[in-house]
Each structure stands twice: as C-alpha cells, then as structure tokens.
Image (tube, rainbow, N blue to C red; front, side, top):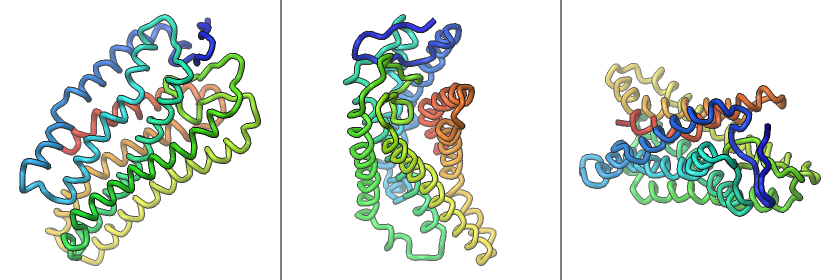
Length: 287
C-alpha cells in the first residue's frame, strides 16, 4: 500500500519494503553518525594542516576529499532518515529541488577530484620534477576546477529538469531526489539525451581518464624495473585505487541498470551504499 503525498510533494524512500525501513533507519543512522563523528576525516584535515611533513600535494587532495565526503553524505542522508522514521515519506518541491542541486553538485565534484588525484599519483611516482610541476598554486587551481565543474553540472542539469510538467501522482521512487528518478509527464526526450550525456561524462569519461593514468603508471613500471620504485608506487596509489574501485563500482551498479522494475529496485539499494558507505570508508582507507 502506497502512502499519498501531500500536494506539491514527492513520495520517497523504501515504502515497498515496510519491514526493512526500521532496519535501514538504524543502519543509515549509525553509518551517518560514524561519518560525522569519526576522527578519520577530521584527523586527515588537521594533520595535513598542522604537520609540516604532510604539507604535500598528495595530502592536500586527500584532505579535500575528506572535507567533501561528509558534505556529500549530508546532502541526502538527513532527509532519508526523516522518511524512514516517519509515516509520511514526503519532501516538498523546494526541498527536492535543493537536494537535487546539492547532490549532483557534490557528487560530480568528487568524480573530478578523483581524476585529479589519479593524475597526481602518476606525477608523484614517475621520474619527473614533481614538486616543481605540481606546485601548491596548481593544487588549489585543480581543486577549484573540480568544484566549478560540479557546480556547472548542476546549473546545466537541474533547471531544465524542474521546468518540465510533473506527473499527477508526484512520486519519486527513490530515497533521494536526483535527475535519473525525477518523474515528468511532459516530453522528456531532450532531458533523456542530456541525462545520458551527463552519465557518459561523469561516469565513463572520468573513469576512463583514471584508467589512463593507471595505464601510464603500469607502463612506467615495465620500463623502470626497480623494487624500490614498485614499493613507492604501491604506497602512493593503493589507497586511491581502493577508493576509486569502491566509489565507481557502487555508482555503476546504482545508475547503469537495465530499464526493468527488478533492476531499478536493486539499483536503489546500490545507491544507498553509494551515498552512505563511501564517505564512511574513505577515511579508514587513507588512515
């Protein structure tokens, strides 16, 4: 039985699994509190600022990721907890619009930041003048580019999506408002094309660039047959590669699903993993 949302609201959440909502509430709440209260993210940021030995380009990007992770999780988890706990799993149109904008903004920023970190890994272990090329000013510029691209992605995607006429039932079959699940009863052809292009850009292109960086690292490994170089490469890149694997595998499982009801329900749980657990596990991986 589906709850009726109030006018101007969207129905969200796991209402098809009422027996799981209490369990999901506890799991999400504990994960979220651990993300916020864990010393991992805070410790990484503080050490990168206070410890002069960690005033390096690599730790600058790691601390940027540690700041971004809780922000990204906070963009969707509080509303999710309200919906899992309360009898009415609704959100206002304004709340959905704001969540949609912030979620896409921060999510895209994280993808771009992971590309930058892959490039930094390659520069750090290859026989180049790393400190001269990747200087602090360039680090700030690259981090700024990641945030600007994330903002531009939201500015381009969100207004056309929200301008389309909404379906009478006003239901979004997910726990978070985002572009792939916003339902419209107008002509969505242009929106579908733009959405596909965004998925290609955010997922496929970004992952391809990361793989190119690691391909270059692997090629350098073949040319430089040194155990010391291999230890350096492993220490520099292993954490980042683990984060990339976790983040992209969850995102691909969540968004690249075939158009059938079973796959969409499965994608909803993968999206939950993508939104909550990546931010929780990242500081554990880097520390």
